[in-house]
Length: 231
Image (tube, rainbow, N blue to C red):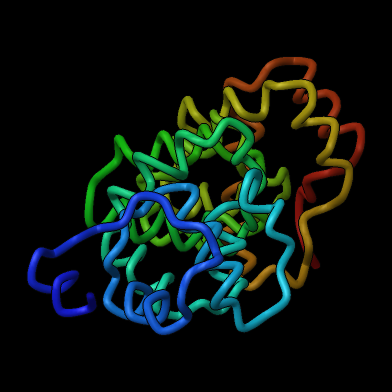
């Protein structure tokens, strides 16, 4: 049977967990199966090295696969990542709670290998906010992440963005003009921010002459969110 599977390059679409372990091991180890929702669930269940909730495959599919430690399944999917993203990741109706780490890794890998269109679909599919914008390797993606509201509102993220763009561009102005964003900026820029003070001062100057709305400007200034100077 195993020889026939190899010779014909047979790919199983649907199996239950009642068959021979020898055959299952062979199919799994040789990737003799299609990447689909049912086969992923089967092999996560059979070959997981860590305890995972199988039900989470419905809402955090790739995260659950990675957390399972099913190494041959993970390697097989990663080798066919574009196919997996298009046929599983994006198609699962409730798959929008992937972990932040997974989303960051996917965005960086997919953009490098397949370009911006697929990345945009991944960004729009998921609800998980990214806490640190600098972990996205390609700054050109930041102008997509901010308008899509996928970046946690923080001064550090805005400073990273400003440093890269070297101006208050339209994306940053629009982002700060959103009520839900500017009201979250109630604290002063962290003096421990790992950039030099000159950057913070430049950011401050540009903010004061930018085209942010009067409401945003008033709220941020009244909350002393931006320091005018540092000793």
